[in-house]
Image 1 (tube, one colour):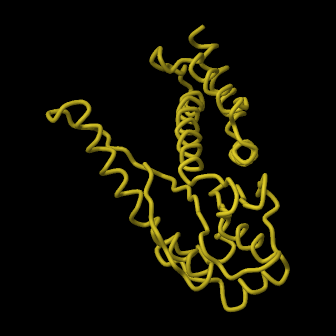
Image 2 (image 1 turned 30 degrees about the vertical axis):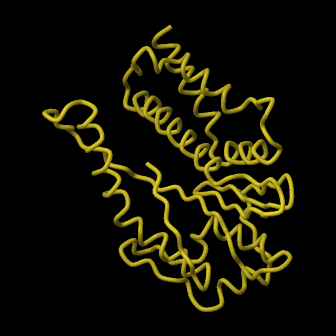
Length: 234
């Protein structure tokens, strides 16, 4: 489920607080939407039990306008990708800023998350991390469209969920069983589609795809789930 929102904020800390507070309502909203779609697909008389219980929100930020110069833009993209460093999340019901001066110190020190991966391929810049992607397109070059980033993230999250389902069955002591159309051959195909460059793939799309896959660790999970299904359903 992809939810698009437009925000104008005075600081990245303000955006970080907003992001975590929306976590209190967005998963429930998505759960209701998915339940309704499943009921429509299966027929109005069918009830979905148990109802989907979304657990995770991954964010993709397109930075359109800003006032940072030089290395400030790089720091801003890093903070957009990992905004948790700007807030106190001890009480999930009341996420608050860490304190005055924290954001300014990050910019002063040109902060970068050690596990985030920057990608470019031109003047436009982006950063991929475990919990999100940030991208600043330049209008005077052939930048990535936000729809391309969202499409890759939706594919990655869907396959992450599917592979996690298989691996959780194994953790619970069960032999993983999937419909034939989503067998280990499906996961093998998905693995190669994600990790193999296409002839018409742009340089920016390639480095973005590689950064997202590296930070999500999805290829390793896909191969583990593929091997598990192949052992159970050769």
